[in-house]
Length: 378
View 1 (cartoon, rainbow, N blue to C red):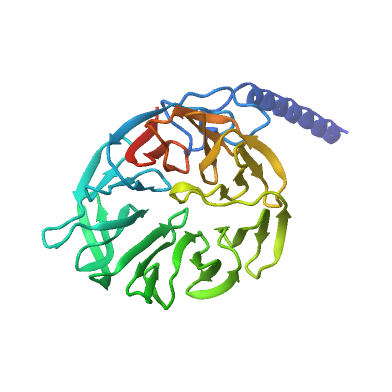
View 2 (spheres, rainbow, N blue to C red; view 1 turned 135 degrees about the horizontal axis):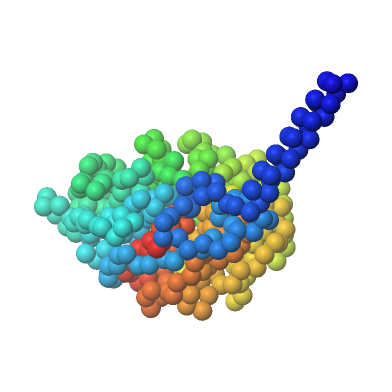
């Protein structure tokens, strides 16, 4: 009997202590529970709803311009996924700018003393703190590599008269590919330092984190991985995320596996390309964002069920955020609950490209005809 009373007393004490702990947790939020991804001494926050348990729920911050350069012509740029380094190309002035989130910057002339003509730059990609600039540098075509200290290397893929086509990295930066036309019929594709010679006219369009490479060939799309052809589709409206393909056949939107099996389909939801090679559809980890012509951005799950409509045109999306522009204002929404985390006016006369860091705290913006602005959270 004494043993039973002891156990009963101990159980009641434990219940009282547990209730006190639960009550304390409901009335006090510990700062240490926030993820380092969104922690900032200058961040403006609002009360977090009990509906959401992850740190991004209902948080907002202000974005301020920390760096700007005025340029003309084609806007070529990139931003590392962690936001630690931005790269922008002054196309006419053949100059590379590297910028950090605090606004500090360095610049380098892409034309070196031994170059016989001004370089023609095709693109820039940032991988592991280095900027890879694909261009024609007079007597050769290839990539010049720069870090904060200056040029640290270069590769030669073709001689004088060869043409730099394009350079792309996957969203996380774990894959880097570029394409060079060597002669009228010969090309070389370089992916992660592995070269593949091609005999026909291709154009490089997409690289996914799983290593999928999408290349246009006439009116067809060639899907490759590790230098091997996996699939050929009778449409060039094809994008990828991981090992899934998003395609547009006429006005039908389809999600395909790598063996060509249709995983999901939706009528009257096709997509296409706009000026500056901007797609009216962006695939991400959990959602697909599609712009309805003359309307807004429709949010689909991967089974193509619509769950949300956001105002404006989709300019960028990653696993955490989506950015749209509407009526001259850039809006950034959290993909956790689709609340707006920040908004800024379009900085120039027109809007070209937008890149956002994975944590949403650094944003690189270009005009349609040049000029660049770097924003950081304040």
